[in-house]
Image (cartoon, rainbow, N blue to C red; front, side, top):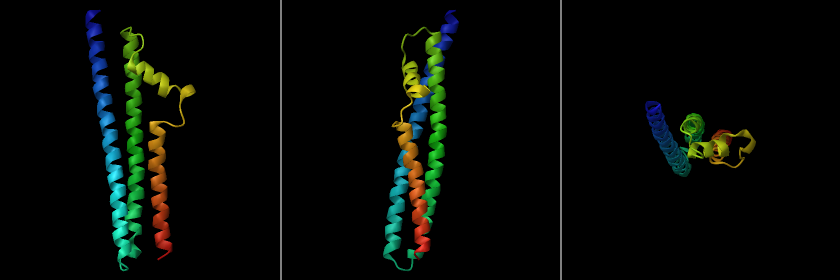
Length: 147
Protein backbone atom coordinates (compact mmCIF):
# COMPACT_ATOMS: atom_id res chain seq x y z
CA UNK A 1 0.00 0.00 0.00
CA UNK A 2 2.77 2.41 0.96
CA UNK A 3 4.73 1.62 -2.23
CA UNK A 4 1.62 2.32 -4.30
CA UNK A 5 1.21 5.70 -2.63
CA UNK A 6 4.87 6.55 -3.28
CA UNK A 7 4.40 5.63 -6.95
CA UNK A 8 1.29 7.80 -7.14
CA UNK A 9 3.14 10.73 -5.61
CA UNK A 10 5.95 10.27 -8.16
CA UNK A 11 3.37 10.14 -10.95
CA UNK A 12 1.77 13.32 -9.61
CA UNK A 13 5.14 15.09 -9.54
CA UNK A 14 6.04 13.90 -13.05
CA UNK A 15 2.67 15.07 -14.37
CA UNK A 16 3.35 18.50 -12.89
CA UNK A 17 6.80 18.63 -14.49
CA UNK A 18 5.39 17.60 -17.86
CA UNK A 19 2.61 20.19 -17.61
CA UNK A 20 5.17 22.85 -16.71
CA UNK A 21 7.25 21.89 -19.77
CA UNK A 22 4.30 22.31 -22.10
CA UNK A 23 3.33 25.62 -20.53
CA UNK A 24 6.88 26.78 -21.31
CA UNK A 25 6.65 25.44 -24.86
CA UNK A 26 3.39 27.30 -25.38
CA UNK A 27 5.01 30.48 -24.13
CA UNK A 28 7.97 29.98 -26.48
CA UNK A 29 5.66 29.31 -29.44
CA UNK A 30 3.77 32.53 -28.67
CA UNK A 31 7.02 34.50 -28.42
CA UNK A 32 8.23 33.19 -31.76
CA UNK A 33 4.86 33.91 -33.33
CA UNK A 34 4.90 37.56 -32.25
CA UNK A 35 8.54 37.89 -33.31
CA UNK A 36 7.72 36.43 -36.74
CA UNK A 37 4.73 38.74 -37.20
CA UNK A 38 6.89 41.76 -36.34
CA UNK A 39 9.59 40.58 -38.77
CA UNK A 40 6.97 40.16 -41.51
CA UNK A 41 5.68 43.69 -41.08
CA UNK A 42 9.22 45.09 -41.06
CA UNK A 43 10.01 43.18 -44.26
CA UNK A 44 6.79 44.34 -45.94
CA UNK A 45 7.47 47.95 -44.96
CA UNK A 46 11.04 47.73 -46.28
CA UNK A 47 9.87 46.10 -49.54
CA UNK A 48 7.10 48.66 -49.99
CA UNK A 49 9.61 51.51 -49.95
CA UNK A 50 11.48 50.02 -52.92
CA UNK A 51 9.37 50.09 -56.12
CA UNK A 52 11.34 47.15 -57.56
CA UNK A 53 10.50 44.95 -54.55
CA UNK A 54 6.82 45.86 -54.21
CA UNK A 55 5.77 43.04 -56.51
CA UNK A 56 7.35 40.55 -54.08
CA UNK A 57 5.52 41.71 -50.95
CA UNK A 58 3.29 38.65 -51.20
CA UNK A 59 6.21 36.38 -50.25
CA UNK A 60 6.65 37.40 -46.59
CA UNK A 61 2.86 37.67 -46.23
CA UNK A 62 2.34 34.16 -47.59
CA UNK A 63 5.15 32.76 -45.45
CA UNK A 64 3.61 34.46 -42.42
CA UNK A 65 0.25 32.90 -43.22
CA UNK A 66 1.82 29.45 -43.42
CA UNK A 67 3.75 30.06 -40.19
CA UNK A 68 0.53 31.12 -38.45
CA UNK A 69 -1.14 27.86 -39.50
CA UNK A 70 1.81 25.82 -38.20
CA UNK A 71 1.71 27.79 -34.95
CA UNK A 72 -2.02 27.07 -34.56
CA UNK A 73 -1.37 23.35 -34.98
CA UNK A 74 1.57 23.39 -32.56
CA UNK A 75 -0.60 25.08 -29.95
CA UNK A 76 -3.35 22.52 -30.57
CA UNK A 77 -0.93 19.65 -29.87
CA UNK A 78 0.38 21.41 -26.76
CA UNK A 79 -3.19 21.89 -25.50
CA UNK A 80 -4.05 18.22 -26.04
CA UNK A 81 -1.01 17.15 -24.03
CA UNK A 82 -1.84 19.65 -21.31
CA UNK A 83 -5.43 18.37 -21.17
CA UNK A 84 -4.08 14.84 -20.75
CA UNK A 85 -1.90 16.07 -17.89
CA UNK A 86 -4.97 17.60 -16.24
CA UNK A 87 -6.85 14.31 -16.52
CA UNK A 88 -3.95 12.18 -15.26
CA UNK A 89 -3.36 14.65 -12.42
CA UNK A 90 -7.02 14.55 -11.43
CA UNK A 91 -7.07 10.73 -11.46
CA UNK A 92 -3.93 10.70 -9.32
CA UNK A 93 -5.50 13.16 -6.88
CA UNK A 94 -8.52 10.89 -6.53
CA UNK A 95 -6.24 7.88 -5.97
CA UNK A 96 -4.38 9.83 -3.28
CA UNK A 97 -7.70 10.92 -1.71
CA UNK A 98 -6.92 14.61 -2.15
CA UNK A 99 -10.12 16.59 -1.64
CA UNK A 100 -9.76 19.40 -4.16
CA UNK A 101 -6.43 19.46 -5.92
CA UNK A 102 -5.25 21.71 -8.71
CA UNK A 103 -5.93 19.22 -11.49
CA UNK A 104 -9.44 18.49 -10.26
CA UNK A 105 -10.16 22.21 -10.31
CA UNK A 106 -8.61 22.64 -13.79
CA UNK A 107 -10.72 19.76 -15.11
CA UNK A 108 -13.85 21.19 -13.54
CA UNK A 109 -13.16 24.64 -14.99
CA UNK A 110 -11.73 23.92 -18.42
CA UNK A 111 -12.35 20.38 -19.58
CA UNK A 112 -15.96 19.95 -18.56
CA UNK A 113 -18.01 20.66 -21.70
CA UNK A 114 -20.91 22.09 -19.70
CA UNK A 115 -18.73 24.88 -18.29
CA UNK A 116 -16.43 25.43 -21.28
CA UNK A 117 -15.97 29.15 -21.82
CA UNK A 118 -16.08 30.90 -25.16
CA UNK A 119 -13.48 33.41 -23.99
CA UNK A 120 -10.57 31.34 -22.76
CA UNK A 121 -6.82 31.47 -23.12
CA UNK A 122 -6.93 28.58 -25.59
CA UNK A 123 -9.67 30.14 -27.71
CA UNK A 124 -7.99 33.55 -27.76
CA UNK A 125 -4.78 31.97 -29.08
CA UNK A 126 -6.67 29.87 -31.60
CA UNK A 127 -8.50 32.94 -32.93
CA UNK A 128 -5.27 34.96 -32.99
CA UNK A 129 -3.34 32.34 -34.97
CA UNK A 130 -6.10 31.58 -37.48
CA UNK A 131 -7.10 35.22 -37.93
CA UNK A 132 -3.45 36.10 -38.54
CA UNK A 133 -3.17 33.31 -41.10
CA UNK A 134 -6.29 34.52 -42.89
CA UNK A 135 -5.32 38.20 -42.77
CA UNK A 136 -1.80 37.56 -44.04
CA UNK A 137 -3.13 35.30 -46.81
CA UNK A 138 -5.62 37.97 -47.92
CA UNK A 139 -2.80 40.52 -47.81
CA UNK A 140 -0.68 38.26 -50.02
CA UNK A 141 -3.53 37.86 -52.50
CA UNK A 142 -4.18 41.60 -52.58
CA UNK A 143 -0.51 42.35 -53.14
CA UNK A 144 -0.52 39.96 -56.12
CA UNK A 145 -3.74 41.36 -57.58
CA UNK A 146 -2.81 45.01 -57.10
CA UNK A 147 0.64 44.68 -58.68
